[in-house]
Length: 370
View 1 (cartoon, one colour):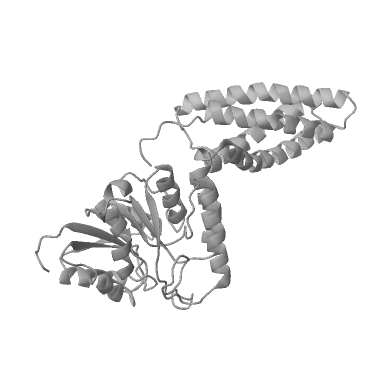
View 2: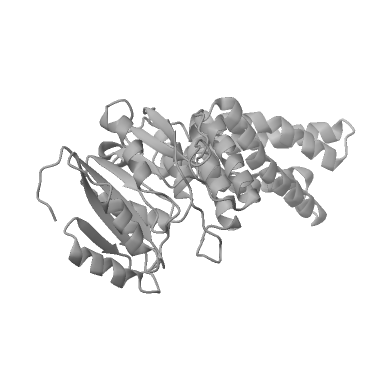
């Protein structure tokens, strides 16, 4: 390879799983975009392919001294492959390139320009914001992509058109601050969420798209769509406006409330007293609430250590449980049925529960990185 000095270096991370038929051509297309002012570092991350992809990657590494091959001993997913590749990247900019032929690397030359010119920190390529060629494929896929993008925008307060795009280009300093947690395709909404919360200069540009059918090797499926929904909420809700957080908490509180009511009726039918049944049901439902809170809405251990966090949670639950039991008994004494009395108490406790969790148990810690 040429040893000429280049002004800029672009690290292109290529996550690869069973792409032996397209990998070499994809790599050649990426290498072809290099020019006198732009050097390419290409990092292929083989995610334990079961075909000949790894052999193809090693053959390419022997031919080009600017290709690095990493290999996972077990199949971990696209997110894990990107994490490995980002950690190895050494360029001024870092880009993502799938190992198939759906995206044209020539578009990377345009996407990197706003960063090179110093006006952007991150640039996304949009399949829906372009007059370039697009293969016509699945209608419901496009509907799903637009819905997920809309939901993501509601939480991030961005006006993106294509959240699920593969083409994302970063300043290396930006991607170095992001700790990727998602193993599979959930990495797309995770990256968008974490970039949005860093308050960076984000740009979006139209790109071409030559999508594949499932018969041709497309891997993303409906379960990844549901995971994307979860990731949008999981990585954004703790930072969303309070009103939006409360809407998310309605789902958490509603689920816990159902558990609360069913357990209350179960204990009551087993012969326990009204107050005892109410208290037992409340504490067990509080456990459901806690698990859903840290899985969906709040960042676990946002500021406190585990012992203090647990203590504050138990204190808030204890105080609100007394309110819940007292309200249940009062409503029952006022002539309401046991079920009606318990429902009124649950609804009355909802705002108290949310406030205690948001401001006492899971307060937001100052951010030092993502």
